[in-house]
Length: 450
Ligand SMILES: Cc1cc2nc3c(=O)[nH]c(=O)nc-3n(C[C@H](O)[C@H](O)[C@H](O)COP(=O)(O)OP(=O)(O)OC[C@H]3O[C@@H](n4cnc5c(N)ncnc54)[C@H](O)[C@@H]3O)c2cc1C
Image (cartoon, rainbow, N blue to C red; front, side, top):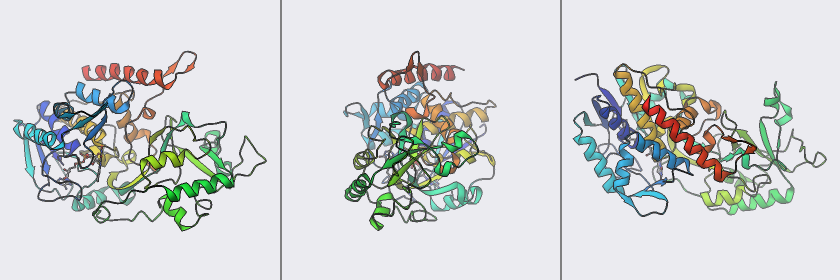
């Protein structure tokens, strides 16, 4: 037997990684702690268990970035997409599946593969040698979490996410908003204009606070808060905005919405009563996050409340806010573009622990890590797919495109893709989405063929 690839975690990422590496001819040992050691969210000992919704989201590979990612995974002999197609349930344009049949089938296919051995048991320490992919997900066991922490340091491993909503920059109304950093701070023009500011009058602010207080909120699941090895409560530094508003109607106006050091270029004589700031979220400048706006409001409520912000009335959200138990690395500072830990290149990471979010994104990162690890063992180097593809856009984002200082988990979305320009100016969304996905398909095929 040749060199073995060890994969820790038989979730979405680990299952796909095992399949890809084994199909490339590399023997795999897939370590999974369930059912001996459980998590608060998993119910079974099966591979690729869907812990919550039974949907892989949109299957539209023409107009949707998740659908495009499905397409790329199918094109790359993805096991999870094949199993999802086999166990598909009627769900409009979404790819919903019979979760138990899906996970049972994935488990059987992996168990039956001549090059895959499923090894039950928890891995508690990061191994010093051998080829490894760590795909232990948002609920990485406490012991392994501590071992990862020992290597990365507390600054680079989080046990909760605190996600502020992210807006597509081209949907912000710049006739109302303006670019300016507080007190015009910065050495360069780009730094002095790094933020987008949305002004509020007193009436707008009061109505916004009322809506925040009235909005429906989600709760932590049972066991979610206590399952972190270091359950840093979200109350230090990343309080949900609605909790801040509950503490006093002016708390936000003296916190993330303070109006000081800013002048509304559209109406310089009017001093805003409060200002919502958005900060660039990716190197492309296509995405902006709303500063300090982490929230546990339900998704529907978030869109209603955030569209009350002047300038965001027509905003389209690349992702909405949330706070969850979620173990994830500060990948932009820790991983190279082959998904290896820079400090220990024998360790690759894949799945949600790398700072992507969702079943599909996690499986896609598993697909890539499995292929890259197999290529390495076989003496080849596999570069990531181009950033114009859905898979490439995601991996480029987590390993370099995202700002390491504010890194939070990310879904795949068109804001991660380099813009497509058309003759005579920007295209409308209707034309732009197929242009993204046509380009992605051609570039992904070329990457696969290379
Ligand atoms: C409560 C909750 C609800 C969610 N709901 C959704 C949703 O509706 N839709 C969606 O797209 N995403 C959802 N997610 C995110 C989802 O979990 C991930 O996107 C996806 O499962 C991540 O895939 P993964 O392979 O990275 O991790 P997982 O699928 O969680 O797989 C990780 C595996 O590693 C194993 N493991 C952990 N530590 C060790 C260890 N030390 N040794 C051996 N094995 C170990 C775990 O048992 C698990 O099987 C949810 C997450 C949570 C926590």
